[in-house]
Amino acid sequence: MAVYTQVSAEALGTFLRGFDCGELVSAKGIAEGVENTNYLVDTTTGRFILTLYEKRVDSDDLPFFLALLDHLAARGNPVPPAIKNRDGVAIHRLEGRPACLIQFLPGVSITHPTVGQAHAAGAAMAGMHMALADFPLTRANTMGVDSWRPLFDRCGRSLDDIAPGLYDELGFALDAVVDRWPDDSLDRCAIHADLFPDNVLMRGDTVSGLIDFYFACTDIRVFDLAIMDTAWSFDSTGAKFDAGISAALLQGYGERLPLSAEETALFPTLAAGACVRFALSRAWDWLNTPADALVTRKDPLAYVRRLSHYAPELAKRTR
Image 1 (cartoon, rainbow, N blue to C red):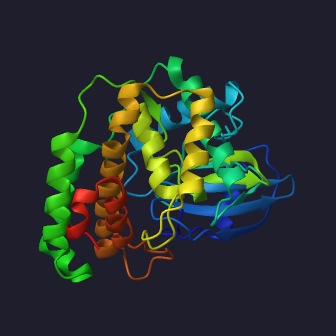
Image 2 (cartoon, one colour; image 1 turned 180 degrees about the vertical axis):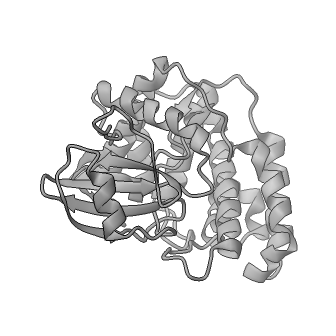
């Protein structure tokens, strides 16, 4: 979440008049994340999230994302579907951007998850995957394994502006991980592909919301769990691994949806791929985020460091 596009109170008030959501009381930009413009909107009837989709989200993909949320919500998963206006329309235009008004879910995003919270989050991901087993739509993973080399090439030698030697280090890891990437033998389904702690809302040890599905796609199911493990099981620097959090996360998932022997064997490779993927996307954002954007840039080196846990043979080449 971030604020790239400013929305005036007048424009937002006019927009809300098309919904049965009351009159505008207040709106506040949300700075976390890097993908879309988001506002926390309070009206006379409740609280909502307004999302304006920026360049990285293709408006042609929005029907997939919204159908996925409707599918999950109908099956009891704690996700926030888009709200339709009085004409039954969910996707709109506001300030020149595609926009949706999203149901607000209570709860807080945790910075330092407990073992109990990690267990609950793993179980929630398994429940999501089970519900998506019969989801009929597909979408290619635009940040999947085939995208990593082109993204690396676009970053180019500017990677060394982030840290000296990063171009060679990340290139070495990229080649190694792509060479080991599994074929199509693993189970595939629609996945979240970005279930970091800030995309899980908690009330105590209960998951109250799974949010921000704008990387959702069709890919290897356990890749989703691997992404989650890399996001939840390390400190913010990526240098310290928390074995207890990782074990709870995997246990919570496995109790509802056990991993096969092949999925277990390939899990380190999938997690190493997640490290490469997020190191590259963070590096691109680090190099290209506008200076005047209300957004928090994330350190790509924190994901380079994570590689040494999943692929120790790369440790001497990572920071």
